[in-house]
Amino acid sequence: MTLTAEEWTAMLLSLKVAAVAVAFSLPLGLLTAWMLSRREFWGKSLLNGLVHLPLILPPVVTGYLLLITFGRRGTAGTFLEQTFGLVFSFRWTGAALAAAVMGFPLLVRSIRLSLDAVDRRLEAAAATLGAPPPYVFVTVTLPLILPGIAAGAILAFAKSMGEFGATITFVSNIPGETQTLASAIYTYTQVPGGDLAAMRLTLISIVLSLGALIASEFLSRRIAARVGAT
Image 1: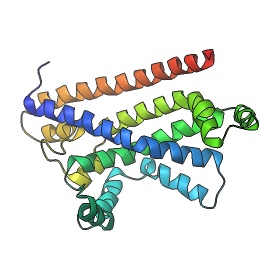
Image 2 (image 1 turned 180 degrees about the vertical axis):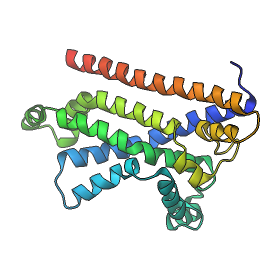
Image 3 (image 1 turned 90 degrees about the horizontal axis):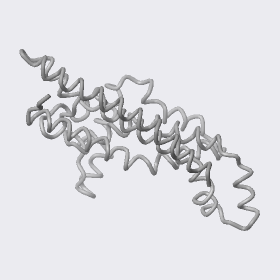
Image 4 (image 1 turned 180 degrees about the horizontal axis):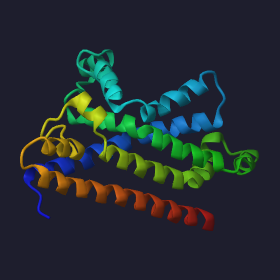
């Protein structure tokens, strides 16, 4: 199966967008999951709802909200452009932001479930020996939740690879700049003679998604086995 230059560009851009989305959302996802799992505070239910909102909202709505917030005329978008020179609308960075937002609930949920499953007596034992909370987290909690972090990151990556609605609403469908695999498939289905190209990219999307799910399961089991052996 030979890909054209445009198809290679769309695939590589999708990989780039997904990788950046996961890399930048992982620290925030870890912090959010920890707060939802270990802290009681006013507005916790609201935060939990906001985190999971992209799962139930139409992706087009999420993309529109990103556009009016991070677009050139949006409050956050204007501030980021004037202060840091960072532009999201109609750029690949905006595609990464949309992918991060859509994959964030899967990331947080996976990490939170792992945190909930940790035996807190282990953390308490380390604390009674005089270990400060950050040291307890790094040496006790973090190794135990690595399977959840790995699974969440890979699932978020797979979600980012397949994101379409929010991305096309926020950053449009610009070849070489914001046209990801999903957008390219949509484009090829709209032009005469594009069925073969659409099918090639569809097969690639299926392979990448299945590969991510299998890798998530394999990595989770391997890390869990290593943690259990220590």
